[in-house]
Length: 173
Image (cartoon, rainbow, N blue to C red):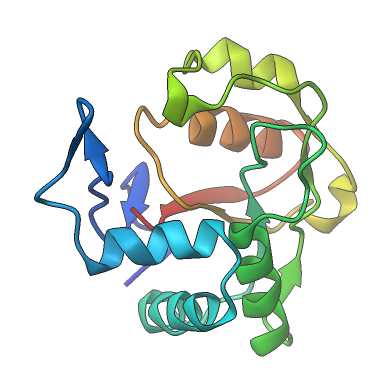
């Protein structure tokens, strides 16, 4: 169960195994890993599947939901953002849609293709918009895949500086 009192830095719903590992097809690639890739492609049935999975892990608490933005400043409507928006609508009396609060203002190299994962890269390229949506609220910060955790650390730091009460980081894989 995901709660804001849980001390875990990042809560992972599932394990993610990339399709390819060192140029070879990964024998550990499984159905949940495929579901994450399908979410990246904004497939509606997969968004619905992850919506159910997320709801099964959430405690009945009020919060705002934000997402880690894509590596590209031009790519605002990601699968993870669509999922978060759908979650906010499905339990609207308890959840504030703050999916536009974190915005990538400067594109970075794609992390899955060897981009720099350092915390400073994220802090320098992400800004908080519409801070009123998260002020004095618990924030569920959602991302599809977390490897180093630095995009989460940056997002959490920025949201807390902008007035969020607590930030719980949740990765699908």
